[in-house]
Amino acid sequence: MILFTGAAGYIGSHTVLNFLDKGFTDIVIFDNLETGHIETIQTLQNICGNVKFEKGDLRNISDIEQVFQKYKINFVIHFAAFAFVEESMKNPSKYYRNNILGTLNLLDTMVKYGVKKIIFSSTCATYGEPKYTPIDENHPQSPINPYGFTKLAAEKMMDSFDTAFGLKSIKLRYFNAEGADKQKRTGEQHMPETHLIPNILKAALNNETFKMYGDDYNTPDGTCIRDYINVEDLAEAHRLAYIYLEKENKSNVFNLGTNNGYSIKEVIQACQEITGQQINVHIEQRRQGDPAKLYSDSNKAKEILGWYPKNSLKDSIKTAFEYEKLQQSRKISMN
Ligand SMILES: NC(=O)c1ccc[n+]([C@@H]2O[C@H](COP(=O)([O-])OP(=O)(O)OC[C@H]3O[C@@H](n4cnc5c(N)ncnc54)[C@H](O)[C@@H]3O)[C@@H](O)[C@H]2O)c1
Image (tube, rainbow, N blue to C red):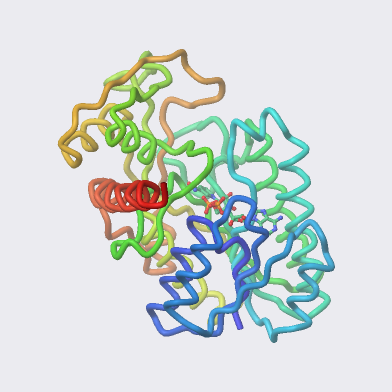
């Protein structure tokens, strides 16, 4: 049975959908629903009655131990974490406790129950200020915010657990996840939403002003360049990493991005084309710690996992727009 931690959330729920669509049904989800949604779990269980859900908090080791006692887990895919960079700068303790202690409790429990394989949601935030672009997996890891530190610490813990106990891990360093399930079964619903595309789309749908932080960066149009990776492509990478780890039984690390960057102005332009709406933009001061350019070299995942992104930026915007409209219509019908 595969244990998915944090799959009531955005990337985890898309990954469960990918596994279900490919015929995996022995799935248990563990989530405290702090940023995830019970409706997402219900959707997944409606698709496959076999999906089990256990509500619990990784910070309490007894919560996660109960899951390992109850089910015969043989593989873990670990999404559960807090993931807002700005919040991590204001409230570092919340991040160190959840993302580090939570992961440590999970790893200790895995060792106790003899489970030796894990896929981990890491991030490009572990690299910090880029020394060069595109960023490959050998780029130095020097995070510039507590969120990035917690994810780097979790990666290091996994390496130590490999040395000590032979626990094998695949660390997947995502760039900027965007988009939604094409069938609108799940999508992005962060509270508050900090990601670019849903915020531009919300501004378009509600006739609000979109706040853009800085237009004086050293890039061709002055706005930051980021690597936007489609969430369904991310989900597929987890399944390929699962197959790789089952077959090779070797720890490894992969960037997951598109090898390409788009500026914020380019993303706004693409959102205008797809929504047919003019988006009002207000230019604010630069935010602290936002590098000008961040995009990946993800060739290693292509060579070793056979993974490559199939969806374009516009595909991500289209699916995110469809999902955002659905969410807004649901809210209206509830009021
Ligand atoms: N969204 C991105 O662009 C992005 C980029 C890089 C890395 N990541 C990583 O991917 C993972 C998933 O991100 P997401 O965007 O889906 O976030 P999300 O907030 O939508 O999902 C995280 C899930 O984990 C659960 N959770 C958090 N702490 C928990 C705990 N202590 N016990 C049990 N459940 C807990 C939440 O309730 C939520 O359902 C995170 O680890 C994040 O750091 C995300």
